[in-house]
Amino acid sequence: MHKLSKYCIGLIVFIFLYQSCDNNSSEQENWVNLLSKNNLDDWVVKIKGHPIGYNFNSTFKVEDSILKVDYSKYNDSFNNTFGHIYYKKPFSNYKLRLDYRFLDNQVADGEAWAYKNSGVMIHCEDPYSIGLDQGFPVSIEVQLLGGDGIKERPTANLCTPGTHVEMNNQLVTDHCINSSSETIHDTQWVHLEIEVNNDSIIKHFINGVKVMEYTKPIYGGEYSSEFTMALKGQPVKSGYISLQSESHPVEFKNIEILELLN
Image (cartoon, rainbow, N blue to C red; front, side, top):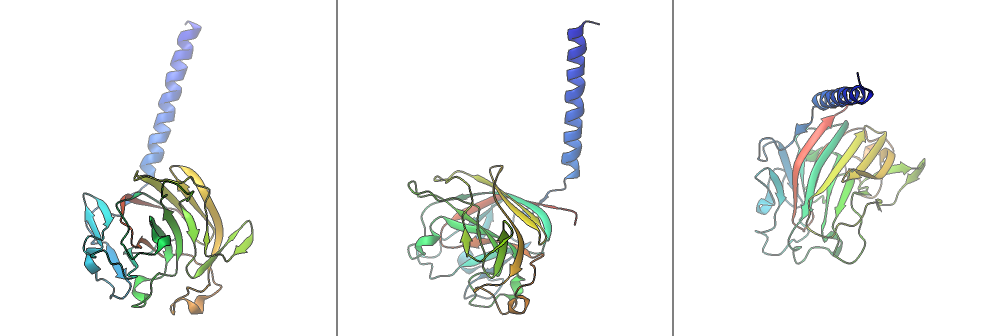
């Protein structure tokens, strides 16, 4: 057989085997769509100043498999009604991926820092433990920010309401730490992935690039709730996942989770 023919056959076999392995790997990854019902049946809403389960002013809604944070019924007055929507069950070891984008204009009386600001809260306390006037759950926040067209404003940052983490083997008590991501100024969809390994390593990725990594989350800090005060200093090993409403319209889609082995 001609050497070139042998080379071509070998290349074809290699490509076939590579694709087979890749397909098998994909089949083994059981990603679950958290919006599969195309409604909020699997989610729990808690908005500051309102009882759990009450979706004040229809802040959260699902349309065409997109979870929307909507302020059309607020009459341009936010009044510090910070909100969160929680998936119905806690997780510990997993990968979470979704796409998000910021839209329209911020509600008029929203805080300046809340401009194009939302977040994915991981390892959240139980939503049924949240106080009536509690603004944020004790959690680890993957902070999502959009740019204003001028200033640098990275996304997938870390904020720590009622928690601390370690970076480079040092305890970090700053409330928010910027990631290494670029600033995304427009209304494009942005792909976020979070890898959570219990109370070990947590990583943030934007559009496939790792932009943040930290370890050993523990309870502690000024945002501690009554529920978590007794846990100060203990590792944060699991919790609920929630998405934020902070006065700027934002949309989420393709919300999927892959549970990992312990």
